[in-house]
Image (cartoon, rainbow, N blue to C red):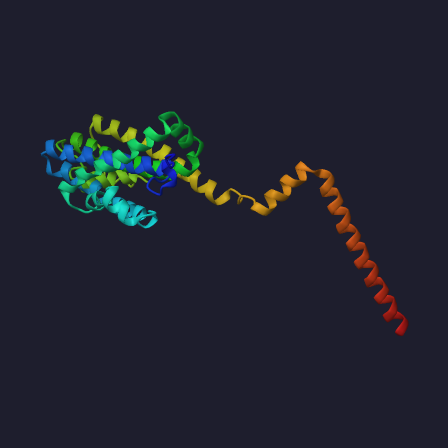
Length: 268
């Protein structure tokens, strides 16, 4: 029996979505390792905050897979749905179960090939832009906050001294708002600020382009219109004959209407 393509089983979703979930899984596992080596309360708070942001995304991923699975029991028990559920809950030690999500993406690469996946991802870059921007924003938020907090918290007259200060500063900087209530005072901090600003311009420029494309692109033609256009191009003589029939019917209807008007005029 031929093996059913993975994208038709309901287990695997679109390529961009699978890569997005895999990237988040890698980030969450990296954060687990960072928490083992970071012994600063403010730095730990930044990591914990980003993990808290990712938790509802993983829970939504589990619900999406569960309700779209062809067999819910098969997905939950045999395709590690239980691992998806446990790893999406705010249980620190259960986050290691997100490795099963990486296994799913490994199967995707094995089935379709890395080159084909890259080609499909690039060809659908407009569809994948939003997910890519969301992931990169999380990356910049976390590592920008960690970097600026690391180089600034012991500096004299530093205005970024806590995790909340760092996260707030990165957020207003990446969105190019820049309130100015928090700012780096060291050269290393200003270098971090330059990188965050460059990333912010690129990411939110991409997001603006995505939204403009979604709202301003005209809708795709309906199937009936497409078929009519294709049939016209394929057989122009048949289309001309059809138009002649329509014109003859219109002329006949006009003649009948003129005759009725003449009858009414005679009666008057």
